[in-house]
Image (tube, rainbow, N blue to C red; front, side):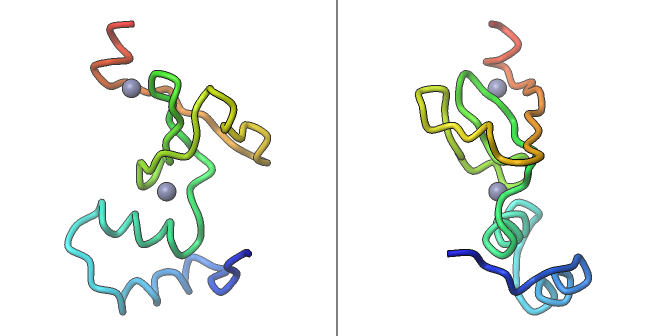
Length: 84
Ligand SMILES: [Zn+2]
Ligand SMILES: [Zn+2]
């Protein structure tokens, strides 16, 4: 099942205008639910998160989808990652 209603940034902005959100985090969550997760991901102690909404997308235990076309893993810099 693929959601294919929004095809441009302009359309996305129009849709966002009609959806109430209280902060950036919530806005990012809405964007991801509309157009799918960002191709940019962050990697944190073996877990991969969406670079936009920070949802957990996969992990190193087998469910990770590095094969996604154009996927970019962005370095993570949280307290946990810096100390390892
Ligand atoms: Zn996301
Ligand atoms: Zn981290």
